[in-house]
Length: 323
Image 1 (cartoon, rainbow, N blue to C red):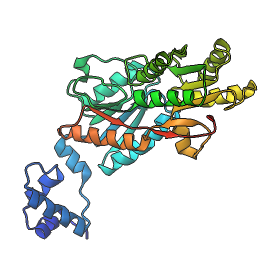
Image 2 (cartoon, helix red, strand yellow; image 1 turned 180 degrees about the vertical axis):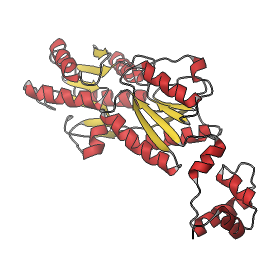
Image 3 (cartoon, one colour; image 1 turned 90 degrees about the horizontal axis):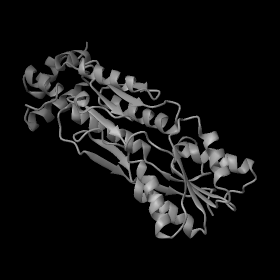
Image 4 (spheres, helix red, strand yellow; image 1 turned 180 degrees about the horizontal axis):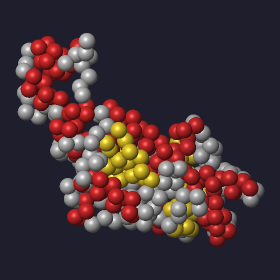
């Protein structure tokens, strides 16, 4: 026979209404009673009817994760851990690929306002009007969509600065930068800023190719980069995919890595999938970032105060592309 809410109330020595309030958030229940109810739930292995709880709270039990493309190693890894974390809070995760279309992002905002989705994690390349974001539980990655909208990022500037300094310490004299420029203001822009600051501090000529690049265009961009700036002995790549293509293209052109060309990349998503130690990289803690952004969103939905900016440190991982 299944355990009922009345059984939990009897075990905890409280009323049915108290158990119900605990299941719905417990904000009006004192801590001592709340703990007793939680212990009774655990002892009896009580499984609440989530659908009934959601109906009472006018909630869908659904979170959305909106990314530009799904077939990118960073977003794939991020989605994996975000879905796992969401399930711990009783949520399902809807993964949406915007395919670089703002209409997809606006559609999700509409679904939040219609209560079809409880909140969303945005990895966006577009600007949105303040009124369209109003009253929408949203968190974002690498950029602040609005004054009150929290976001999670990594130490883009400091990490890149240390990486470029490392190339100089390893004897590089002609260091280039290759990346994909965001369509909107983003923390990712601090990578190029850090590179340029280091070049200026050392009196070195910058060699930059940082255009708006869609995933899948890396081969063409890298070929153009190597043709435009011949003789580079060091490159900082702002993304792991770009660095991987750069390494493969260099080897095809008989450019020895790392003897003739040293490469450092930001991200490290591929390495986390297959423990590939080939590329020296600044590894973002993707799992921690994904789990934290879900926690922030769940807290925001619950009306709790959350920090606007949460930053994680990267790890410098030595590979075979530097000396």
